[in-house]
Length: 64
View 1 (spheres, rainbow, N blue to C red):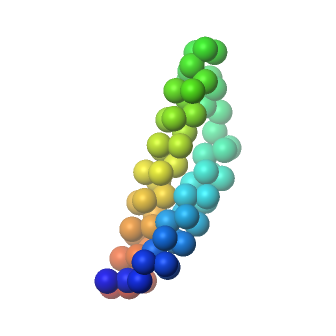
View 2: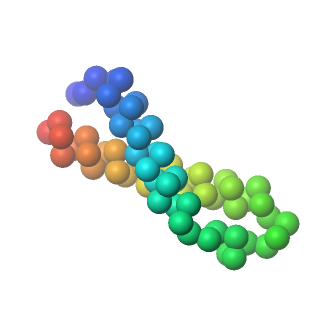
View 3: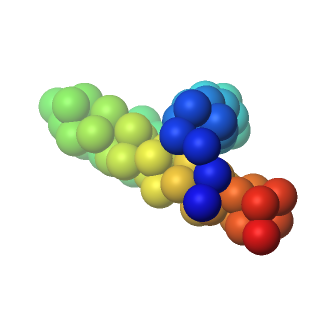
């Protein structure tokens, strides 16, 4: 089991990495003009899922 501080930092780093990667996509053309909040919720949710997957992969690779 790894220490909590490096795990938290790794999850935060991968979240910001996922947000940077997703910023290159144009989510606006998939949503209606009046559904801005729903598009933002999906954007953050997808970034969280991607960050979790990346962090778990790196944790398994580095500490196992």
